[in-house]
Image (cartoon, rainbow, N blue to C red; front, side):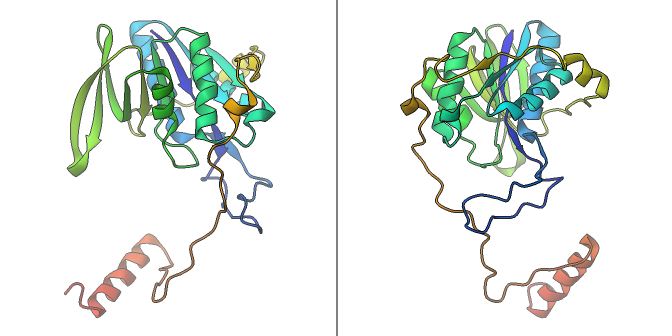
Length: 259
């Protein structure tokens, strides 16, 4: 089974204190540490496990600048067979639809049985997987937390309301968006990183993919970033988790919420 996994380079929230810049146009990116999107990492691990079980290959693709190559190499050190970077100034300020258009072109230029994305990225919209599937007219499953490979199809599990699990069958080729917790992504060691350090990663421009400026142009533009104001009467509890819990219980008791 030949699998394509879409990955993204994002700010590492575990390593950074994210702040909005002075004009509200973006976050402060000076000295920000980047890494692979967490959800995408689970998707790559799942793809590797499927390949190891049934054969085939895993290709990782990212739309970004030359620094996104670092993310691709990390996922190749993890076990992916190939990488593709889509790097063009036309995509610099694009939106989800523009990214999906680039991924669609990459998919059509290859031959893949399964396309995987993370359920979310740093924008939190969770739209790329669905857009790609719609553009390619392929079946789609979102928030997948279990995959069983069948003959020409997959059985995919999704957690639904109340903590219940549902299983659906989806025909191949298809697109699935992976939820965190589906597996435990493997550790990437220095030896693995060195092994792929010199591997050539093809770089595709919009022209290479047959895409125009209109294909890449954003149809949705971000107006502003802001931190919501503290509401009247709101109180932020400080201290350790245990201290915050004790303070919360005291407040609830004082207001008659609990006895």
